[in-house]
Length: 311
Ligand code: ZN
Image 1 (spheres, protein in one colour):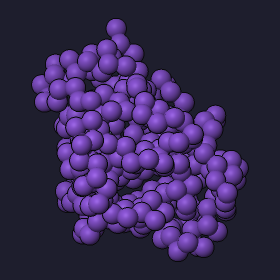
Image 2 (cartoon, helix red, strand yellow):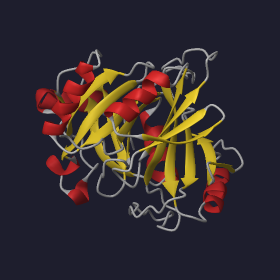
Image 3 (cartoon, rainbow, N blue to C red):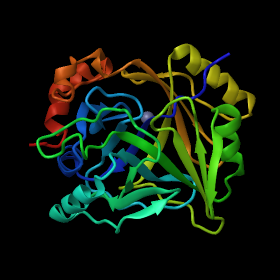
Image 4 (cartoon, protein in one colour):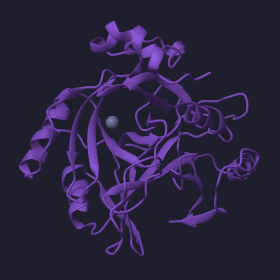
């Protein structure tokens, strides 16, 4: 008998210019760059991983910065909002900071009793800083300008926009172990009790909305978390048993993965905790070297020339 899904593992999105993405996430938001590698399917594009100090699953946001690209459009069949957990009383700090850095934001509001602040990243990716209604003991990465009193602790939730929530809700509840935790108008909140952070998935039902267009500022996929490869393969069987197509296990260097499109059209991944980000760099050097998977190591010189300059 396998365990439940342990919340969100990581979320992967598409960005435009690499340097602008790096500055926004490490400097403006204060996340740690955990890994600077390449897209394994397109090694002339970077793959950046951001998260907390030690790269705990549930804190990891990753980007493929594609350079000059059009802006995507939020719509159905995609994940459309990322919610981070921030400490109580920190929204004032973030409002000041967003003004200082000309970040587009809305005035704070409240959802399910939790205060939040919506903002857009430089590519238009919609995100929220949320003061969680439950305690969040995760320790955040601190920077010179962002201390623990305000720093982002990791994901609180992800929102998916769907024409109809039913079939997606069944995957969350019958396969992943989530439970319906609340509903507000067309927003259905699902939560797992298997972890404390990154435990919420909101399904937003918008029957007449157009299908989203995946491009800059869009979320490419949401990865859910399992402990190890044995559990990963148990989930593979469960997804197959529901008549859905799912990939073979793929080695992503820092975790093992499976991908499947859930019935609502959103690309889901299931990813393991192991081996983690220290598999090819020591903890205190995470993100400081260009790390290439073995199949591209002999092209290092060429790739270092064609990848965008980051300084
Ligand atoms: Zn992924």
